Length: 135
Image (cartoon, rainbow, N blue to C red; front, side, top):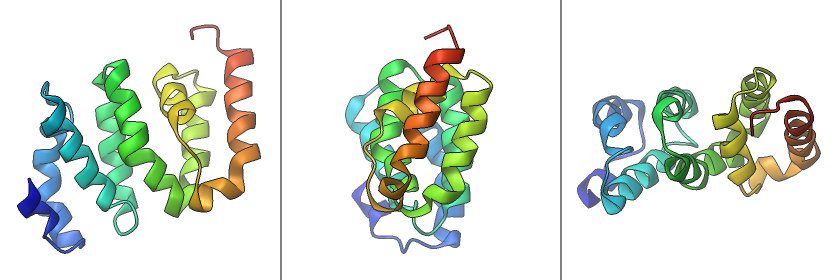
């Protein structure tokens, strides 16, 4: 998968690569899955909406281990660059008591732009824990 990393991080390369990543990001082999997720993470700064849509699709069927990997390899970096846009969107998922998104957000280390929103993230997690019994 190294040859894919050599592509420029543009919308054109994302359009070419993302259709394959849906399957590869949930591959049963750890190395394939982690390489694919790391590649998605490379697009967080330049193509955040494509990344968000992909993460949304993957989160629907991901195992707990894969949700953690989504958080670490992708969502952390999406929030690093675009927290002001995506923390409210994650908040919408949490307000619907979506346990998968709780697990993703709770697994993220906050840095970059997300660090500035630590209190908002904490409030979302605390709200979820208090209002959504299905942890």
